[in-house]
Length: 259
Ligand SMILES: Nc1ncnc2c1ncn2[C@@H]1O[C@H](COP(=O)(O)OP(=O)(O)OP(=O)(O)O)[C@@H](O)[C@H]1O
Ligand SMILES: [Mg+2]
Image 1 (cartoon, protein in one colour):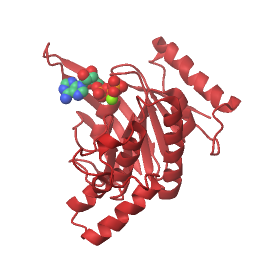
Image 2 (tube, rainbow, N blue to C red):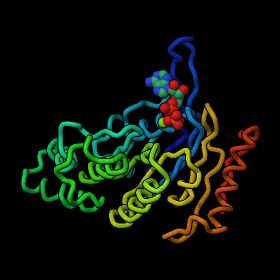
Image 3 (cartoon, rainbow, N blue to C red):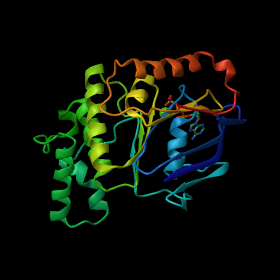
Image 4 (cartoon, protein in one colour):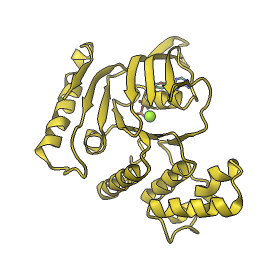
C-alpha cells in the first residue's frame, strides 16, 4: 500500500531565485493492486509527485510510505515509465527488457526466459530482435512497460505514457495495459492530462488543481471492466471532472470524496 501523507514541495525558481510552491498538502493512499490516475493541468507538479514517490526528489514536508516503509532514498523496486520513452537505442527489444535483470545479476538463461515472457505479455512477440528505431511509438511504450514489469516492481509509476499517440494506438495500449494489470495485480499510479483516459482506466481519480497543486477531488470509478467508453455512467464522471476543471476558482473547497 502507498501512503502519501501531507506532502509539500517547493522549488527555487531558476531566474528569480524565489521559492515557488509546487505541491501543497497532498494526501492520498493507493491500496495494493489499485489503479489510481492523477489528472491535473500542465506544470502543476504531477511528474514531481511521481519522482518523489520513486525517491528521486525529496519533499519539503510530509511523508511517503510504501508497504509501511518510508521512502527516503531512490527506490529500486519501482517501475517508472517516463513521459519520454527510455529504451536504450543500441539494444534490441529483448535486450532492453532484459536490462533490469542484468543489473540485478540474474543469470543469463533465466533472464532471457523471463524477458521473453514479458515480451509476450505486452504483445511484442516476433519483434524481440528489433531495435527501438525499427518499431512504432506504441510498440516502444509496450517495450518500456515490459522493461518496467520484468523486475517485478512493487508499484508501477506511469507518467503520461501514451501521450503523442494517435487515438487508436492509445486505446489499444490502454486495453493492453488493463489486461497486464489484471494479470500482474500491480498497484499503478498513472498520470494523465486526458480525463477520458483516466475514467476508462482508473479505480480512483485524483484531481489536482493548478500550481501550487492541491487535491481538490478524489473520485471513485466503481465500474466493472471492460468498460464501455461510450457508456452514460463514464460520461457522467468525465463531465463532472471537466466541470470542476472549468470552475477552478473554487479550487479552495475542501476535499470531497465522491461515489
Ligand atoms: N528540478 C527543478 N528545479 C526547478 N523547478 C522545477 C524542477 N522540476 C520541476 N520544476 C518546476 O515544477 C513545476 C512542476 O513541474 P512538473 O514537471 O512536476 O509538472 P507536470 O504537472 O508534470 O507538468 P506536465 O503536465 O507539463 O508534464 C514546473 O513549474 C517546473 O518548472
Ligand atoms: Mg509531467
